[in-house]
Amino acid sequence: MFDVIVIGGGPSGLMASVAAAEHGARVLLIDKGNKLGRKLAISGGGRCNVTNRMERKQLIEHIPGNGKFMHSPFATFDNENIIEFFEGLGIELKEEDRGRMFPINDKAQTVVDTLLRRIRELNVTIWTDSAVKTIDYEDGHVHAVKLMDGQVLETRSIIVATGGKSVPHTGSTGDGYPWAKKAGHTITELYPTEVPITSMDPFIKGKVLQGLSVREIELSVINPKGKTIKTHEGDMIFTHFGVSGPAALRCSQYVVKALKKFDVPTIELRLDLFPAKSSEDLFQELWKLVKAEPKKQLKNVLKGVTQERMLAYLYELHSINAEATCANISHEILRQLANTMKQFSIQATGTLSIEKAFVTGGGVSVKEIEPKTMHSRKAEGLYFCGEVLDIHGYTGGYNITCAFSTGYTAGKSAAERE
Image (cartoon, rainbow, N blue to C red; front, side, top):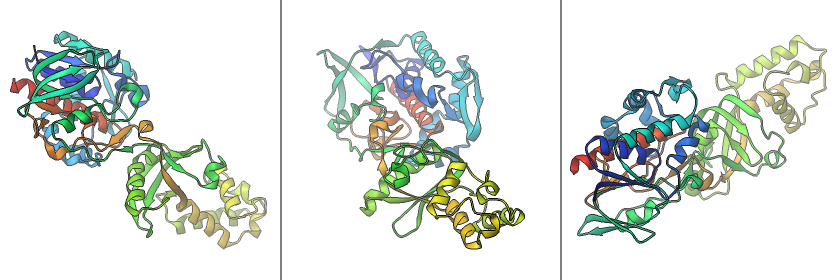
């Protein structure tokens, strides 16, 4: 009989297995797939952004989905512990922009292999291709894990690390939610987060700007009364269905929530191509350029102000003759250009599906979980960790940090309970 059974071989399940075994438990790790760590292997664009080196206060600010809950798990195992853990296993890490930590060789597979090696050193029993049917409870205690093939594995502690519903080809297909419900847990509404945003604007449907990347911009989600709900800075890319890239991904959950809250078909996004300048400053800059070259064509003088395809679209949008000489360009035309560069409007219709999202919003309610141990408040011996919980961060190493932290906390707690 195993002391602890961990269901799910993603980041949180692997870390839970390590922690439980390090603290003396006999551990069985079960996964329905044929390979462990599949989501980890493709994370960070295949480079695996193992954590983020921000101060804890900032770290929590980057976890918009119940970040405050993370204070307790971080007290047990935080981003600095994650860095120590991997470096202790021989993986050299490097810090990139915005505190993101990657293995020095840029290979996510190294992280997966190293974790699996550690799990094997600790004599964790691994069963792959073993789908779980349900968890059985008796008198408010966990009793056994029932597999699809009919096997019944009795145990006193079960850690559910099955992930959310995003990236289903890695095995996250929402399996853990019914088992949590069976124990009496609330599953908050699931929705896609960190997901590309869709739009039916003519310039999107016409693929006018498709593939165009804009750097160091600000993207804001605007409510129907014109008030800003949320602004994110970073890079963005226009796609054939809408917008993507870090700033868009971070705004996506606010688009989903606003569409629902205000019950409207579209929500406005406002793109600011020059966040460091005011409209007036930008207008003055354009005016100086135009005034200095009165005989040249407008398109040649403003070349390089922003990307050529963006400029070409703005000329078309405002019916500006880009071949006109600068002497014939009015203040009003330049003001229009400056204003649109500061407030380029996109009507968002929603996002791609939860399956296409990087992260699942919603999940097992954290109100029903003890934050210091990740133990269920509904059933004795039941623990949850990772994305099955109603916790989510922005992309940039925050979700994986939550997965490793809650996983380690659950594993340590389950072993100590035994």
